[in-house]
Amino acid sequence: MKKTILFLLLSLSIFIFGCRQKEIQTQTYDVRLIVYEPGDDNFLRPREVIAKYKNSLEETAVNEVINILKQQGHISENLKLKSIKKESNIVYIKLNKEVGDMKKDNNLVLYSIINTVTEVPKVEKVVIRTNKGEYTYIRNRNLIKRDKSLNPAQVLKKQMLYEQEGDFFSAYLLMSDEVTNDFRKSYDEYYREMLEVYSLGFTKQKFEVGSYTVDGNMAKVKVVFLAPEGKVDLYFKCVNIEGVWLVDWLTSQANM
Image (cartoon, rainbow, N blue to C red; front, side, top):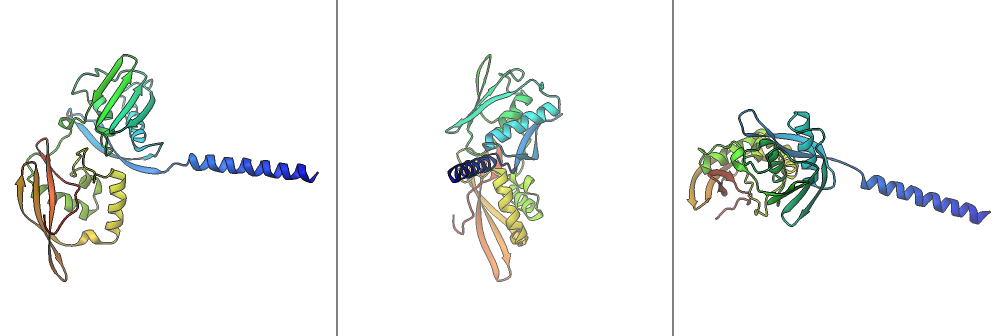
């Protein structure tokens, strides 16, 4: 009798443990993403969304942009994501059907997916497989509206003011989207870090953006921080990507 009771208790413990392990594995949490949706001006419009994390940031992003495109009537409800995986810097997406003309560079709906998933750091290429073929894509920056008139000092000042105001979405959009930059953070990671920095009051410090020098596609910009104990000079890098100056992800340095 005692052996039977012990066996039942042991079986119950294993069952409860299994259920708890399954519950832990299926737990979800919110992440912030930048999703690119088709605009009325033939450009992609970046949008901040909060989504439930599923398996990977890449899969979460693709699921979210597909859902948004369906809600807006850009794609059929029948379009399904069959699978997604990442190998090295390439994301492989398998869809059950084509997204319009898969060979058009101005296919806004298609590049809503491509530019959304390449917003995730370390995604250099996207390979989409359908029942009709396989297609390889890279990020299409020509479909993103960016101010090409800003010089390195102007773009850095604008980005820093956004951070000072707590507008981290706008600030992030002025950061480099260069795939090979090992310092690049996802929007969710950047947002969480900046929220903590902002709450501690570190972004409230007064500053003056000064002169800059350009060497090829890189620029060095001087920033003077006006601290109570005196002025502190730091230098920040900006990078020119396809004719647009953006703030580089390298940390500031006293001497560069």
